[in-house]
Length: 550
Ligand SMILES: Nc1ncnc2c1ncn2[C@@H]1O[C@H](COP(=O)(O)OP(=O)(O)OP(=O)(O)O)[C@@H](O)[C@H]1O
Image (cartoon, rainbow, N blue to C red; front, side, top):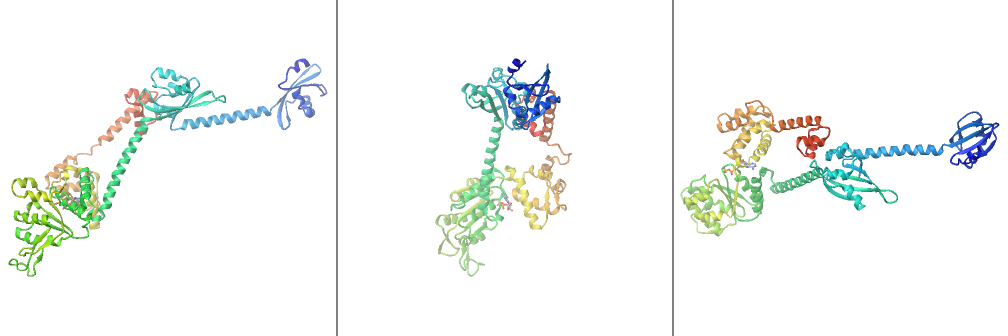
């Protein structure tokens, strides 16, 4: 028996006499001999556990002939191993949680390129489910065309980390970074792939570019508004064409050349004149306005050029300074220039060429320094052809032409203008009118032949005629009576019929319903995308938008 026991050397072994004396002990058991009494008492009392050096140990014994054969298993090692195993399990669980909650797709494969784990984000991004991938070799996935090339295989082949773009057969483009994990001998044991949706990245990139573009435009507008300085001058310009008009006006404000502003009545020609003057070096000097169509020829002449005392009957005895002279160092606005009588056109041309003015009845020339801005709603080229306007004067005035489009050709300005006028009117009359979205809609369809002035007057009238805070469709319709064209425009908005569901919403509801139904019929996003004949990424995006979960 002792010969047999001698062969056991990985656990403590000893034999005891029936009285408890040690007859034999191997090297491991000898370690415990100083605790011999504890051991023999435990054995004699038929116990199994005792404590050695504060570590629990286990005793197994059996009696053989007149001896006890005792095996001692120190449990310290066991406990340590159990503890290590438990903490390893915990670490592994935590690691899994981290991997599974990553926004990026993560795929782990072994040293042979066989996928052993993938996180849920990977399926969301690519549409490839755990069933499609885990346990399968990446070589197979490549051969079956599920992916066009594998970052893992490349990393294994090149024995280093790699980053590639990869196309999934669902149509999604991904960016994959494969990082090898090595053992202590430097051999690759696993490859961890980090997967990002390039379609989404591209989309984000585009969104960023779009935002940057918008920011630039806003900066430009801010700059422009800052330049406008005087809040009373605030010009509403949402449309591209009106923004161009304003930019052009600001650019030429400081140049002293003549400006000819053209556009239909009420488009805002005078607004642009004010913008130019108040942004020019002449802003601290006079801005003198003359309506060439409002006065008879003689009166207009004396207003423009002035007269000496006794120049004509009824004239002021002291004589009079003409507006051109009074505007020295400032700006002269010649409104309705197309209406200027021919004789005055010649006189004006001289003033513009020689920068000198002679009063009626006088002989003395006075030098003047003026900048001329002219405006007309008429077609001057046509007037020239008809012999009603001098060509040379036209070229003198038209050094910088500015054409303001009619309101119907820049409908994007209508709503911002309404808000602007509402604000001005609310302040002016101390009221708090606002306008309902449906009522706003009605304004968009009308052509506003009287342009901004007509819109401004309409908003003022309706604000004052409406008794409630909110101006609704009914109020607009009441005010429209008698205005057939505006009424027709209002009818276009179908204000009398029950509210029509917005097409956009209806389509979205329909689309979301189809996606839900299809997801119910297929067990993965990839298959649903295939069935719906859309890209995987498109489907995932739409699911996110409609808050649908698989
Ligand atoms: N872009 C705008 N932003 C704010 N208000 C505007 C704008 N355009 C025009 N208005 C307002 O509309 C009204 C008409 O504008 P304005 O007198 O400048 O037009 P006009 O083209 O000179 O007209 P007309 O040819 O009849 O002289 C004014 O009260 C003006 O303040």
